[in-house]
Image (cartoon, rainbow, N blue to C red; front, side):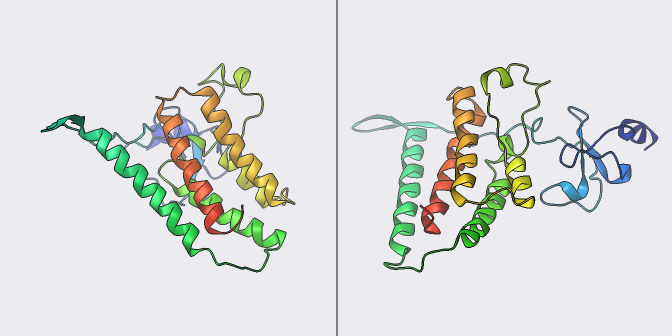
Length: 215
């Protein structure tokens, strides 16, 4: 415990940037950067036992093992079939959302749209594919990032802009979210875990825009 207190001393929260409440500051075992328990999403009540890693240091969950199998009339890979099934499920979900949309609906006010935007933001923050976009990219860990990406954006920045009433138009919120994905696809290769996560999170975002009649 004394060793942990020495690590906490002088550390600041990467969310609120404050150094107070060291007993509520959880340090990453990978990069030694901290977050207050009450600044996390979801909030924690106590310091967890064992090792803990922040969203930057936490590796993405490994994909389920895929097997190959042959067919009597030819050969195909089981994972290709699974990808096709997954795509069909996503397409059918989008079609179902479209069918559920009412033929005529009262036009939403700007404040109502922004409240729905906050709901969508919280869902993206809690989604399993949101891990690369929760906080700004650490320039010390990725030195060339800000040379390649001149206009960075992340979910915590969008959340802060909501808290400080920076959004006057819903369209500005949408532009910021799309900027996250634009930066992701520009910086990461298609095989990178962050690129794949960005593609799935963008599909969720577009699906919610259609579902809430915000497009």
